Image (cartoon, rainbow, N blue to C red; front, side, top):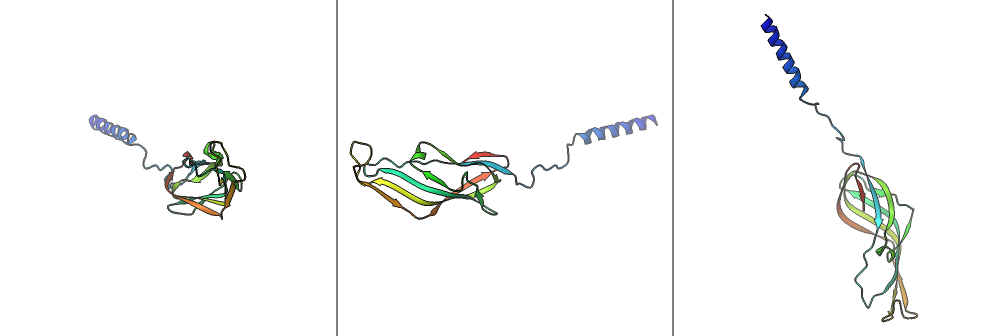
Length: 166
């Protein structure tokens, strides 16, 4: 009898030890996706190759919006630092300008980035002054354009709690 009780006690003890090592059942952390990434949007520009026939003195446009388009769901409009931002593209070739800082963006895969602008204007020399920076006297010209947008196709995946600068 003692032998049967001892065997039963060892069997129960072994079962409890093995059951305690099996780990926690199915626990889900952040299972539904979601969450937000923190993104900053910075404006920089790459100047064109130097040309003796082209002398851009100023290139400006008013950035009025930035929109991210996810692969599924609704577009996300990025809140800019100000309602409109006049971008001087000649200046941002050496500097950069923050359009939106620490924006909470829903975690998702985005397929497009759209930048909307108005009032683009280019001021240029119609006759450069050879060997001297700037334009020959009286040779400045300018062209203004209509409002528009630039669409960049991308595959941008943002994860919850991710931090990113674009």
